[in-house]
Image (cartoon, rainbow, N blue to C red; front, side, top):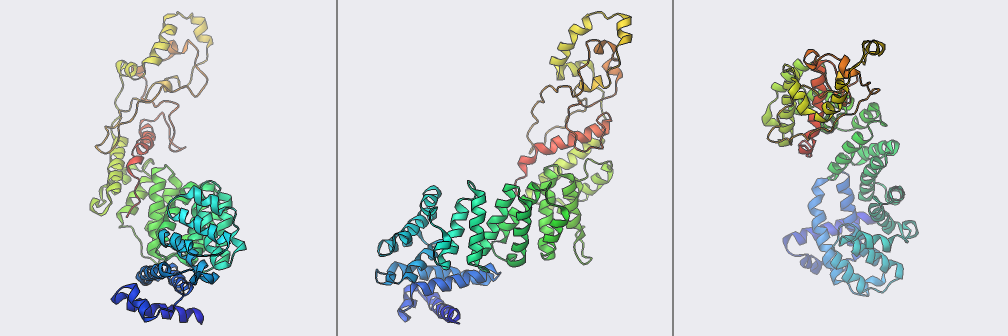
Length: 481
């Protein structure tokens, strides 16, 4: 009841301040203490965390009013410990470091509280190393909960990179001390990213579930979405698709679709075919019979997940129907690359002449010449077993696709070492002439799918698809809008 009275009082002052300056509001009521204003600020922020975006302007104005009150505060005001704690909480709630430093210099309080103020000023001024050095010895559980929750959140954020395990413990403490608040929202949001970076799929799934359940409509939920999509990619080997579906099923249909579109896009670029196919199918599927098959992003990403399959004709047809005007610039570049690759897959495979092979890999041909110069007896030749796939050591004869204006030119590939036992010196003499051999891909070329045959010209071109997509990865950093 007391909290409602305080916030009601503060809202009344907000209305007065809207017509003039914060000082004019305080002229109407100069008896409001700093801790009362800060408490009102926290209540507003908690409403924002719960999805009340209309409270955002109130937060800005209340921060302005609180700043003015703290600037005017004197040593007598800070004799009340609640007011000095309010100063520290204000600083960790997005306050002005100049105000915090100036007000703390006028206060007479215990050394630990002054140290916290000094650490907060360092944190707000972008000096994380100095901040953590000052704050690290202070246990958030040893100070009053209203201060401890913010202190644990700040320390957890500072330690996220260097000491992630300790950071997660601190973020848990922040949530324990301040459940259902903006502090918990921020702690959960940070926990999702740290857990993903640590490879902790269980912690990632739990924090994501808790965030979606309580704070999906927070204005900061877009940051959670970034961490969730990145985590789904990073942890694709350790978190099941069923678990991802459980988490996203708690979202509204539009947010779920966007999350799956982003996962599908990232997975397609990274070559995670199964994950891309799953996410794009979920994005197209929609809910309650309302599918998204006409969404050009869903069509593009689902096509990318099957671009190296035998259904290349269907993929080309789907890509050709996409409305480019509805795609972001990055996705238009991805569409161009996918269409170019699909065109290469179905293009005729030209035969390579001897001169082309020697130009492509002179080192290997030069190494083989001494062996060709040495005569081999008929008996020795007949005693040698045939070298299966000896020609797979030759470079691919599939003509490389010309780079588009947006895509960087491919770097020349280094000589590929044999992946099977090295052939004997008699192998080149026993092998048929290159012009009589079907076109093949190097045996050491990375396979994009286990069911593709590198000795088949079409499959060889499909394998080349993944390498070309990797080259354009750097063009596609932006998330779909």
